[in-house]
Image 1 (cartoon, rainbow, N blue to C red):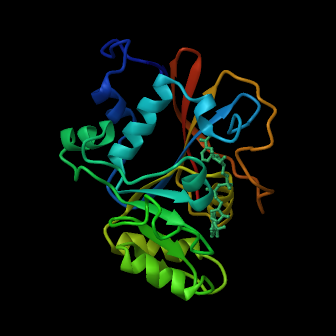
Image 2 (cartoon, rainbow, N blue to C red; image 1 turned 180 degrees about the vertical axis):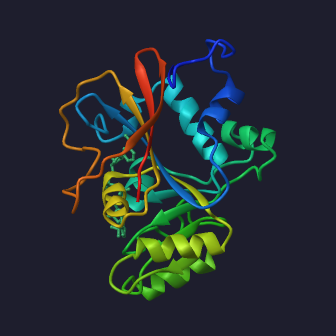
Length: 244
Ligand SMILES: NC(=O)c1ccc[n+]([C@@H]2O[C@H](COP(=O)([O-])OP(=O)(O)OC[C@H]3O[C@@H](n4cnc5c(N)ncnc54)[C@H](OP(=O)(O)O)[C@@H]3O)[C@@H](O)[C@H]2O)c1
């Protein structure tokens, strides 16, 4: 993987190793919500219902790096279900990367679900998973998930209040979050003005599918600021700041 922007200096090596990739995505201390997505050139985010058809070795490295640098992984229930999410394992590539960085080997997965859809018995329905939901969600379901070890945060009455949720997560020490989508959650997060960074991998593919980066119209056009572009095998790894 090579750096295109900012233009590499004479001291930069051509091929970014894991340390260089960590340095390229490291964040200053403090709260932040960065969003990691892969999209095709036409803005499609799935092939046959999953993101894997757009993936590449470089995309998986960036995905692992962002997970390694985060305090927690934030994800909408739709994505957790479609992609078969499970807890971040200590003996995974992410766990090893985290250990090398001197961080706790695992990071909780935080599932956002208005209806508390996470099923007791699901692979994710264990500690240290966090469920962010609202008061309108079925109380029996919430209690069953809590009994299974899931930390249930009720943030909002009829809907999840994302700014309240992010405050609650920060209070639990989960200050730097990587949000892995999906489009419904990204759209809500942008509309709520809580996104700080968009890390978008652009795969050289044209899909024309129904699943797009955003699930609907935003109240205002968001104009992210380009910070960095890396490249490998024709895939562009962009890093944009989103000014709140
Ligand atoms: N290419 C990529 O990088 C990428 C990344 C992520 C996902 N995807 C793809 O996107 C598809 C899933 O899309 P999606 O839009 O359904 O995903 P999603 O945003 O992960 O899931 C939507 C569901 O999550 C919950 N949710 C999301 N935002 C919420 C909010 N603000 N408040 C309360 N609950 C919220 C709701 O769950 P309840 O219904 O339980 O209340 C909602 O039905 C999958 O096919 C996945 O593969 C692609």
